[in-house]
Image (cartoon, rainbow, N blue to C red; front, side, top):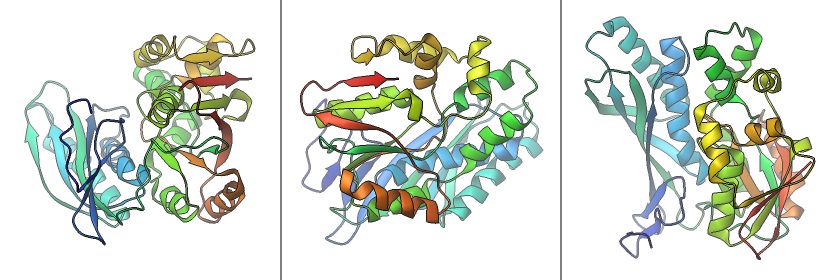
Length: 316
C-alpha cells in the first residue's frame, strides 16, 4: 500500500493517487481531506487567491464531496505590501464563500516567493465517494473544462499581451467544479479525477493504472481554450509540460496522426482544471444534459476500452 496505514474507516487513502482522502465518521458522514498551494500564476492578487482556492477545493469535488471549511496556507515575503497579501486572502475567502464553505484560520510563513492555497475539509456520504480506481471497460470519458491554462499562464509570465485569451483562461480557472461534481454523483459515475499538474494524459494514466484498465483519448474531441494552439506553435509551454511528456513515454501509445503540438497540449499542467469523469455509456447522455442545465459544458473525449494493459491510447 505504498506506506499507507490500513484502517477500517479510511475509505480512500493515497495508495492509488486519489485526489483526496476520505475518512468515515459514521454511517452517514465521511470527511474529505486535501491540501494544495502554489505560486502566483496571474498578476491580479484577488484573482490569484480565488484561483488558488478553487484549485484547492477541486480535489474535494473530484471525489464527489462538498467543501465545509478551509485553512489558509500561505508563504508571503516580508517585502510584500500588506495590501497585496490582503487581496490574495480576500480572493480566497470569496471563492470559499461561493462554495458554501468557510475559512476558519490558517498559517503563514516568510518566503522569498509568494505562495497560497488551502487545506480543505469536506464531507461525503460513505459509499457515495467517487474514486479514480473504479473505471470500467465500456465507460465513456467526459471532460468538464477546456485545456490550456498552463500554456496561457506561462505566456503571461513571459510578458505576452493576451487580452481575451487570458480572460477566458482566468474565467475557466475561477469556475468551481461544484456543479460538475453534483452532476457526476447524480449520474452514478464509476470514477473521476480532476485534471491538474500532470495534464489530461497523466491524470488519465493514473486513473487507468489504479483501475487496471486502458483508456483512449481522442485529440479531435478535446476542448481547448482559444489561442492555446497558436501559443504552443510559437514555442510557449511550461517546463512541466515537457516533464509530463517525458514521464509518459513508456505508457502512452500515440497515434501516428498525433503531432508534437498535440502531445504538448495533452501534457500541459492545468490549474483548477475540469473533472475527467468515467461514466457508463448508458448514463453519459443524462450526465451531459445535467451538466448543461447547470451551465457546465461537458465533452465526451474518449472511452475506457479494456481491463488489459493499464495504459493510455491517444487517437486523432
